[in-house]
Length: 485
Image (tube, rainbow, N blue to C red; front, side):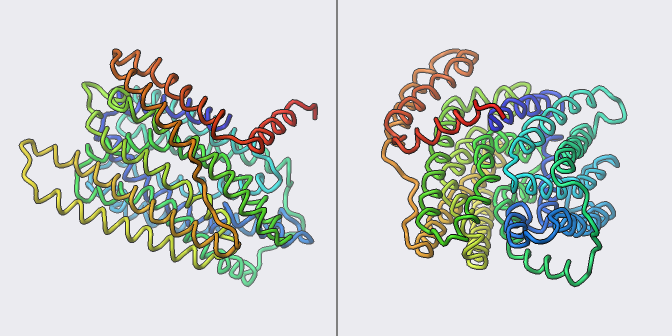
């Protein structure tokens, strides 16, 4: 449900940003967003996944005090990062084009970092509803509504996207804090101690870096593309990336619950159960992401045409196709990493570093090759660069999935494999339906084609791909939800 809410809420923002602000403004916003969210994730010191283990290990201590330690460190680090970027904004805007208000987007760094920690604390107590409210309702609808309003406010028009984003981050934080205070209350007899805070931070560094690298693999392409291409190409690529990241948001729906479940099994040393959990959830994610990727990718040209005037974003269709495939091949690495961060933190870190280095090298090489090709229309080079950046990401994530799944399988003593043959049959059914859909007028292709592709794919997956154990878990969950509190 949270994923569907995110899907519905994100689309209006993409439409407003493309139709009202245009590709160049979207490109400037995207370039700044890369640095802001990366630094915010680093400043949260890996607590998005590490907090569950700290709380599990420190049950005798006041949990609110343990969380307050993390929030204090995050607030200090993010304050320093925001101040540095405010006075030296060049990394935010590689093109050198920005307004005075655009720079204030750095204030989102503390808000984003604190929200990550608060939501992780709620997830430890199996409160996923707060994450859904903050991330799937409040944040996306706030940015969508305010982006539309600010466009018609003279002083804010040029920086409307940045200001709307800033407001959405703090709206999400306020939503998360409301539930957090009701759940944990304020810390009792808490006083920060430098030695304790340092030990906590040092322990969290490998996980924080792994988080930043995993997230960075989805943003490095925008950063490199901004160095080789102009804001328009970056804006087109960002729009394709936002559409392609809709399947990725489904994966995040499983993240809050996977951490606590895995840490509980680790205490029992039940490695077989961890392997089964990873494989089962991995298949669910791969199956769902593949279906959504096909539903969005087959009518990709019509979909990209929605987000701008005069087909401004249609040249991003090639990038969209590669990005959607990248989300599917990355699912195995993401689910395997959910366990690796607890059983092989440093080795997982090195694999993550290798992944982002490989992606960077592939992207730069492809950018250089395209730069040496003569195109009849100069702007065509930027469109090819966008597709090449997406292709490099797909290859790097595919390698990471193979390596991480193999490594986790050896550690647990049980193979990690998310593949089931019905995936192939479901994809074939979706492609057949999709080829019929693209023959329709564009509005019918989107209105009827996407649901038809999803229906054909979903029917095959449910009847052929899901076994009795999968169906029992889904039905049990539905029955639990129907029980009175």
